[in-house]
Length: 117
Length: 115
Image: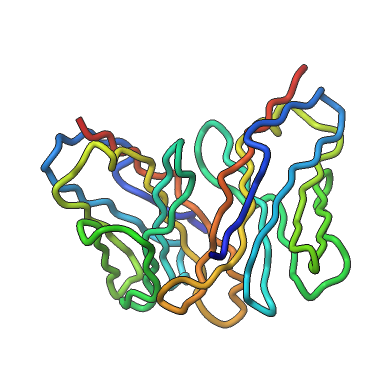
């Protein structure tokens, strides 16, 4: 079955330090985007960063960057200089094909990130 | 540009009742997807609508249904509620075509509690 796997249910990091969240996926698509979403305690999911599978260069958005290994189907998120506001649930997402034969964005089970002051 | 709006934000129902949740997508977005979020199961895909047609469906029983109107607003309905339907229901919109990257834009969700 096609899946998105986040193997770290919880992570914690000292403020100002760096943390890496892991994600593996298993899509049969040939050209696709991968996403990391953040869900703070207020609940609204917001996009953190996205990566196009055809691009060799890893995406970067300020303190957030990814390590994309296409052959290994691995897509980890690195947060540098962690801040208290980074505390949230982080979800990795990949397009997978549903039983309808259409693409749907499928999410991992999430990693709860705690920032230690 | 207004974001995705979901109503109601919170609701409490009893077993056996039915519920209707509403979602207004970002202006210009024609695709609306629904997800159920629970602590144990994470985000589970319910269905997607595009131009008033169900384009995709997850593995949920027939008690879960939805529809989309000509203005792209969408509703989902859950009939004969069960305790296990207690969850946060998230709506997300996207352009649905053209340069759509697959990125979803989420609403704040509707928190359903079934007693």
